[in-house]
Amino acid sequence: MIKNDIVETVVDMIKEHPESVDVNKRAVAYVADYYPIGKIVVEIHVNVSLLPFDSDVSYYNLLDSGAYSEEGEFVVDMPLQDCGRIISRIFPTDKVGQFTEEQKSDLHIMATMFHFYTGQYKIVSSLKRASMCHYMSGLYNPKGYIIKCMELSQRYNIRDYDSCYFNIKGFGLVNNIFGSHEGDVIIKRYAKDLQNFINEDENVGHLGGDNFVAFVRRTRMDEFLGYIFNYTGYGIRNGKKKEIKLSATIGISPLERENVMPNDIISEASLALSYARQTKQDMVVLNDELKNKLYQRKQIEETFDKALENGEFVPFYQPKVDIRNGKLVGAEALSRWKRDGRLISPAEFIPVLEQNGSITELDFYIFEETCKNLAKWRDEGIKIVPVSINFSRKHLDDENLADRINQIIMRYDVDKEYIVAEITETADYDEKELMTRFLDKMQIYKIKTSIDDFGTGYSSLGILRDFDVNEIKIDRSFINRPEFLESDNVIVGSIVSMANRLHLDIITEGVENKNQVEFLKKLDCYYVQGFLFDKPLPQDEFEERLRIGGYDLNSKEL
Ligand code: C2E
Ligand code: MG
Ligand code: MG
Image (cartoon, rainbow, N blue to C red; front, top):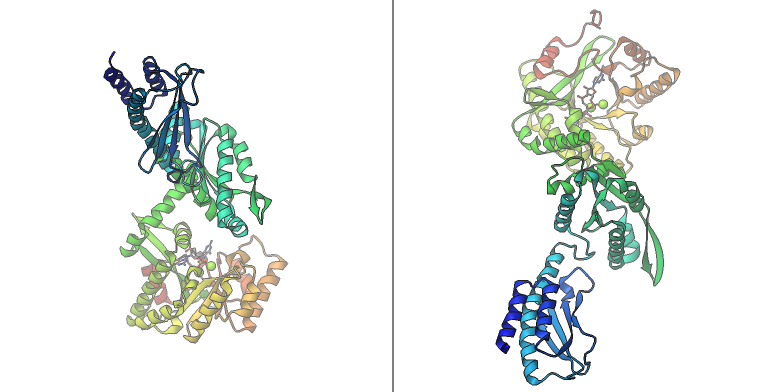
């Protein structure tokens, strides 16, 4: 066989299967029949800065006869642009001791071809692997994680797995104590420990920061939760090793069906985690009921803007009544969402809008509609009454809230005595200053304010002392009882007498029966709002009630 044929055959073999160490070995064995090679070691170095791994040097023994000459080592070293380098160390048999110059020249050609194909393949696969891993921890990134999960679900039954998305609790504090550099190192250790905890048929990924995902066999979930809720690691501070205990907040989606879409694996667990965070729970397991609820919530969020634009939200008005004479003394505007012929109650959409902040837009919309209505009724010669509008505490961050309310009242030219702004009692001490700022400004503008759901917070008495309001609205829980106890008398009685002494208006909500009316009368609390008189009424029915001006207390229904 002539030399060129050997080189060509070897190059063809390598070209065909650059990924196969076996083929490489066979190629080398083939060459070794013609050249006195005792041993070949290949080193592949991948540039570390391109990888999430600390080192990526691989060594292959492509041939080792055991009888080779160290001194005769012939090195072919080839840089692979700036991605790394590949080095072949070729040793002659101990019998020859040295390669001839001609042999070296042939080996150089063959090694170079080998480097070109195999090196390129190795580097590309290392970089491919890197593109699927998180640059810091080396765990799978979302793309790599999903690919690996799908591979596992082809080999095993996906119904046997739970998909988890978790976040280390209070990691900000760890960063503060140890510094962000050591914080990163702690995360790397955490990632490594997770990797060790996870079995071959399971998976774990790092989505960045202190967020991780895991694909765990359901039978191992208790063990896994025990691990992440009670993780013990360490950090180095001032040269000393300090133990760290870490816990987590976790969302879990049990993958109890066949048709799991790749993206569901992360997104469902993520949905469960955000719900866990919103509701301040350590762990939430997604079930069909919760999925539905979260789906509806998403629907509300997504359709809100359009619905507001289309006038799907409308104010209903619930009368406020003086129980001494049945007179209509006011009303409360309560929003309803008219959607596909159905009337959606605020209990369904207000909490969602509170959470994403859109509630502020709705409140102003209901407020403006109410101002428009008051102006219209007045212009039509109907005797109007003061109407309360609910303002969410979410508005308190807006320092211009009172100014905006004032401007709108002016714009619709409504007399200020017909507007009351209701805001719920706050139990949150931090909001106290914001609340004071708002209430004080409202006093300057001479717009009435009312504290809604009074008595449900922790600082009700503090409110009476600290806040300059015009009215308190006693929460319905105080009168919503099968029978009144002496303690109810004392509590409601003292709220009423304090309010009277402070010259505050007082009203009780949720009055449903005559017993409650008698109870309140005895305590000198005369203004009420409740189903006994009317539920919140659509605009035309309320208009009718305005025209009548009140209720006949002697009528049978009352
Ligand atoms: P709220 O401001 O305390 O309003 C009183 C709620 O009690 C109303 O529920 C009303 O229908 C209900 N209610 C009145 N009388 C009775 C009664 O005798 N028995 C019973 N069981 N319930 C009675 P609604 O309309 O479902 O509103 C619920 C809550 O949603 C309101 O509580 C308020 O906090 C909020 N909300 C409603 N509309 C708006 C709005 O436009 N903006 C804001 N920020 N919140 C609103
Ligand atoms: Mg209210
Ligand atoms: Mg209320």
